[in-house]
Image 1 (cartoon, one colour):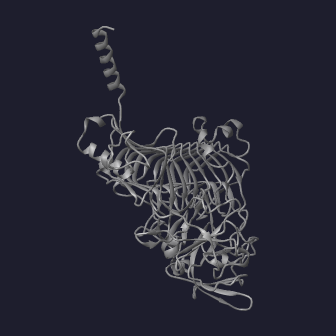
Image 2 (cartoon, rainbow, N blue to C red; image 1 turned 180 degrees about the horizontal axis):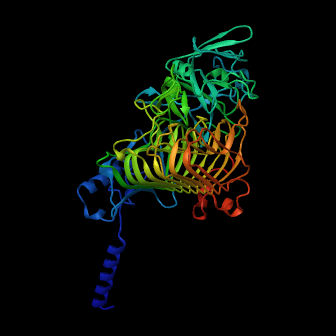
Length: 631
């Protein structure tokens, strides 16, 4: 080869390299060292320090990043002690994006959990049921900062263990009476005796929600018991009008509100159950058959939020992509600290009461006032643009999976799996807060507050709502231009996909939303007043089309057993177009809708072509292999 030919080839190679571009790579591995340069051969140890290295390259405008930065995580679990923040300084741009990714073909997981080790057979444990004696193991509680910490979930070899409760002990009992003045319930006498109720909780089924109430006192008589609760949840529980505890005064076939107890050593009576004793500093667990705690991987959650992407309205975080990353093991402790009384979809009441004289400027007949709090997300986004999640895995979480809270746009979640989520899988938009009453229309003066142009496509959302039964698979409140398309949503306790908020007849920022070609099945396992697809309030140019909805399960404790539907337009739903949705039955419902709704060709007669095209598209079908076929 002549020197001229060599030079020509090198020139072509240089031109080709510039044309295709090469991103700067920063490698991270569990066995790495943060003093390493971050190459594949000498990786760093933490995402935090790799992120800082990338940030400095951005700050200095280093020539190596002209085509972008890739932070590549090698296979393994990265246990993080604090929420990882992505700020405006971490932003990329159109030509030089920032990508945080797991190495190709490898499983990289960010975990907010702590391991529990050194298990041994428990000796005499006061209060342990007779059937559990000799079968329960114990370990010291993990510590952070030299102190034990509280948790409400535990996973053994990747499977969720059950917090000791009466939920699995048979048919749930029902309350006998409600005394709002004394803030008490009358209940049947429990068939167990709890000597110390310090961690005992009462979970009650209330129409489309459940409430977690910390027990303050339990007094027994011959044929009933009176139960009272701690504040602030006690006041809220007995003041809020919707959804309230139910007493059957109309001879409905379902009966009074059902309930169960959780959080006492006396309730640990089955394999797979556990109990945390915060005074003794111990956790107790009855292993399932085949589990060996000497070598088991036992993890409890510590962090509420793993990753928070947060910019400002003037300077949002932009052009960041998360790809092939696992987000696992998050906690949520409010129910243990202040109870949990939701209004709907997991949004908990900070204050709520019935107006003596109904009516507000927006709604003449309104009697229900409510101010809300929001469950934490494992990943949260505030003031972000073009932040995407591709083929990520969200699992083992106590509350929400991913939450587009405010000011976020032009972003997508695609090809991701959401499983074993305590609350809602994917959530976004505005739902009110402690300063904005939940039944008001949301029309902010600064449009930059709004969540808009979000694409939720080809995701698998399954086994969510397994802590808070009233949450949903995918939920967007006040938001616009949201596309929810070709997802599979299944095995939920309440509704599948929900859009809209406010119960309001006033036009707001929610509009131009689309729910198309989703496959929704096995929902309404425990709750009712439910829809496979559910909408609230005015939604100009809202379209619900080409969806497949089936396997609507009948909740066992509904006091109105037939109050379920495949598509549900709830209060003041207006200007919604519903067409070409296949459902196994012709069962739809509208509750006080507004004008302009169009129904066309919905039900079991819809073509097989539409039915079979719904759900995850072929190029993403492989994600369904990541969770069991049936939950």
